[in-house]
Image (cartoon, rainbow, N blue to C red; front, side, top):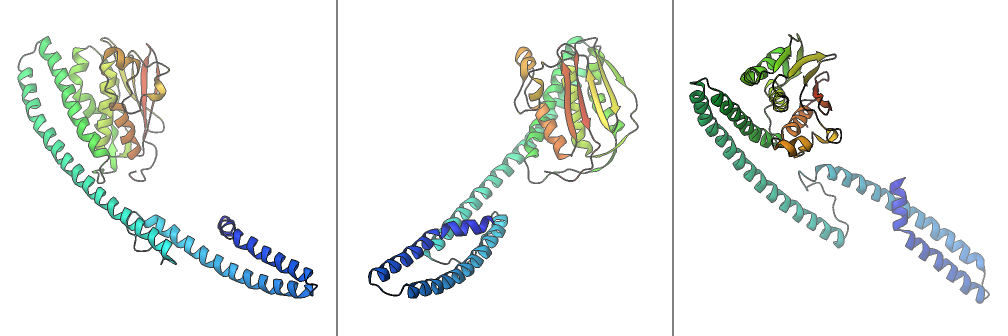
Length: 330
């Protein structure tokens, strides 16, 4: 119906012209004292012809619109299926469209090449950075001193930031390395906890964790990255003597709760936004505003959910829901 009214409006000027011509003939025949029936008879015959042409034109218009709808789905891939132009105007429009398509393809290829080169550079840079980081960790572990423990924690944060760079770039890549399998959630949690074990010990933060006995459909590497980011934030904002709890809520909702400084109520709805640091980040100068944003993006790709519940000075709870079946990457 929408197409019909669109076609009708585009031909309304022709219909008005037809009725004006009929009115002129009627006026002339009346002034000349001729039989009006001839005008009416001619008008009826003309109307029948016009309606037939109108219907045939609408049929062609409908088929062309459907063809263009199909082309609309393929326009980013090819312009070969454009309908044949009916006049010079349509031909010029199609030539403009094909020129824009060629330019878009050139820009896309240029961007892909630049992105590929950037990915290769940062991948090489990440692996090169890991070598001196590992060497410094070995040197610092040689002596068990409070200064070395502090330096090891800072070095661990540097290593985490290096991994965040590569993760940030890979999220927008056309090709990903997601591998969805049934994973033991306890195994992933233990890997994350093991990485921060020294911080738990030296900062005297108590860990409350009991085996979860849960299997989830996920990608182990990317889920591990999310858990490490959440644990890193929990440790960052939990003072010495505090507690971090890891437990499971049904159905398959992993909870990480801390007794840290919490999040202000006005900041809570925005903590997963890119670059948002909130009051805590502006006060302590420790937040980058990227960690939780990456967590949300990764959880979306894994078809998991991530939410936060917090009150200022009463701690924060992060919930990662893994109860939905994975349908694919967005």
